[in-house]
Image 1 (spheres, each protein chain N blue to C red):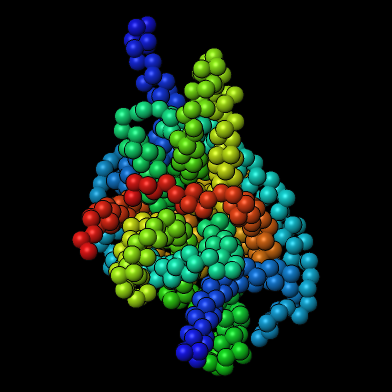
Image 2 (image 1 turned 30 degrees about the vertical axis):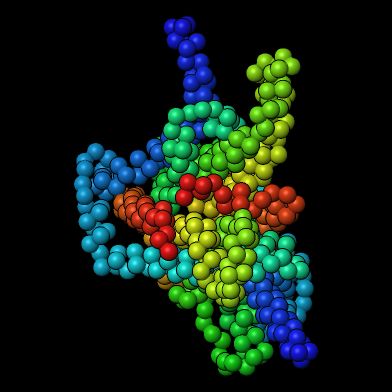
Length: 285
Length: 278
């Protein structure tokens, strides 16, 4: 025993030190997830029998497909728009114009401020009496009646981008800053126009950064809960639908909610695996 | 030739103008919502097509304090955040040390496993946490809500601390052992002071994560453990926009502090970071 301890002392110490982290993982993530999975196979209100009904019920509903489509639409639209916003933004910030530190900090505002506060501010800003509509009506005289943005699909996409673009922007910015200027100089010396340099040198080189950041944006948008809960109105993505099973029904429909949560987690994992596979593929161009 | 140069310079300035317009629009797009909350929380009789509230008042803050019981809600929030930060840090120091300084087979796998809670929608395991906590009677207790927060905070703290430990200079530790310090002594007198900045930034970020946490709180809270985010959510449902704005202004203070800290020193990549494997 003593010799075993002595022989494996190094490994044992490492293991003991790892234990708290592993314990919190298994106790607070793995076990709860297991409970969710097991509960999703139980008939409603029963704790012994097994059934597939929660899944067949959920997947059989006509509205389910719309909910899943909505969730994916919001997440993908938000991801694409975040990329479209982040690339020009970070290219400008990289030039170190006067005041670039302030703009850099601005990128971080949406992820440091509580989502609920952001959602409230956006509802005020885009509301029928918000500044955007006042600008459109009184400042620019473009429209007569206030434009309805809150509680519409367009509005929800705008809110999502506001909340989650930061992940893409920060990652893109740090990739861009790590880029060796020699590549661009070489291209420019070889006679490429600024646009060509951007299109054929800079963008391909920062692509891994953009994609890695967009994965984070996608995950956040796919699992978004507080934003659609407050600002979604009648648009309810998966996370909100799951919560409604607990909140609206008495007794709470834990089994149905668990089945939906399992489907949601699986959809996200499958999509992520697929995305990472695309990501890791060496770019041929 | 001269006109050509002038023309080019004008074009350059136009380009700069365009760049600044874009950046300014971006800045306003991000920040005006907060300005509107601020005005709403101080404004009275702000109806119709007015750009600014006609009168200013502190009434909504008084309402927020008396009606929505801010002192108790704030106390709950701080107690819960305090417990969550303590537990997460105590978990993260040994685990971060092991992951950062020891040779462990399959380190990458362990790291990804610990980060898995960040890849799954929180609502999925929040359901399980709620059911387990009902059984253990942890629902509506400060400790219970705090432990639920650890599920999200701990991976984060481990991530930050393992990279801090990894970044330590080997030579300093060797110097300590050459001078005759044993392992424990080296840890407490050399390693710990060196990683203090990392521990502090981990504490700051776990604190804000817990302070702002909504999903897991919503599944585990009760009348005795209403936190600020939940109170804000309930106030939105009750429809008093002015009082909700006043609440939001209080809720936002720690986040502003964190932004200030980031601006001072911390690299923003750390906030998002840790997806080296991606």
